[in-house]
Amino acid sequence: MSINPTEMLSAKVQAMEESATIRMAQKSRDLASKGVSVISLSLGEPDFDTPEFIKEAAYAALKRGNTKYTPVPGTLDLRKAICDKFRIENNLQFEPTQIVVSNGAKQSIANICLSTLDEGDEAIILAPYWVSYIEIVKFAGGTPIIVSAGIEDDFKVKASQIKEAITEKTKLLIFSSPCNPTGSVYTKSELEAIAEVIGANGKILIVSDEIYEYINFSDEHVSIGSFEKVKDLTATINGFSKGFSMTGWRLGYMAGPGWLANACNKVQGQVTSGAASFSQEAAALALRTERSEAIAMRDAFLRRRDLIVSKLCEVPGIIVNKPLGAFYVFPDISYYFGTSNGKVSIENADDFSEAMLTEAHVGTVSGAAFGNENCIRLSYAASDNDLVEAVSRIKKCLESFK
Image (cartoon, rainbow, N blue to C red):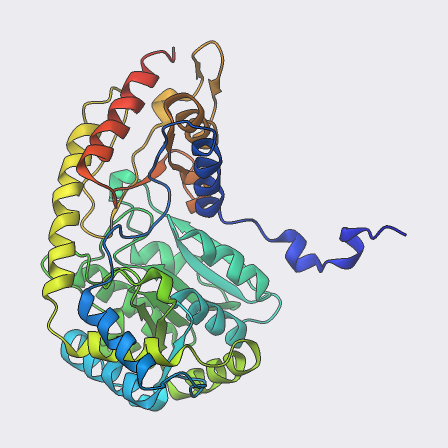
């Protein structure tokens, strides 16, 4: 007797979209396995190794036998280090009971959505957005409400747009700054205007994803939770994957009002429990150590940003802004919609991204996955040579599309 998967799987899972970034990375690997020279600029992963002092701290913890279960919300030592970090760097005041350490910042966001959203509740998501926001909200039973900004506005949504999108069903506002996929950074005045709107409402929780905090080329990083009107209405998300190049360590955290931390603790306790013991010890040391390694990585990303932006500006028809953070560019490639090279046609961003992989052997991600159908995302977490070669391939390939 054969099993019909559609009868066995939940409607939630069947409705869930696969991550576009993971899908394109796998396509790049599949093509490379056939002997094709592929340059993959699809995944959001720093190409630097984890700093040596962090690895040594984990080794030492392992050797001491720090390999047991941890408290669900994280070790007290790490939560204290996170509180100190927030106070010193972000002007945010938290107690350890308001911190929940998770297996990556993605889990922190999922914990919040599962803790707050019921069927029919709305979550305003600022677009372009990180691919997982939409699916996490939907999986939790909520309805995503997309509020968008284009390249002409540096991909930053205005407070007035958010105000217009608020209804009686609005429960959350979710965004990232520095932003994945655009690299845009909201200024202090822009965040203050958003805080005024949310503070005046008083019933909406802001989910501020600040995972790219240390990869910020602007004058300062501002946490929206530092504004008095929304300090009790904000969940601040951060982690170690980007700024400390610790992607495989799967370690993130949230800080917010006590009632939310308690709820996230309850959800996590039934799903995964606490994060790994030795990684938390190393992470606490990372937060208590000066940021020279993070600054060096940021400076390298800044140089690469300038390199890839300058090269993309040489490609006819492509429009690119200069992002102020993260390690992505999000160029508008709609000039090529309706063109063909005789073998492949480009009608949208999905087609463009697919064509760049099959024809130019460069892995990118369609902007449609991030809420903008005119753009693609390229990660510049790659070597200078790869970046130059990738854009050269794209430019040469596009010459044949008429």
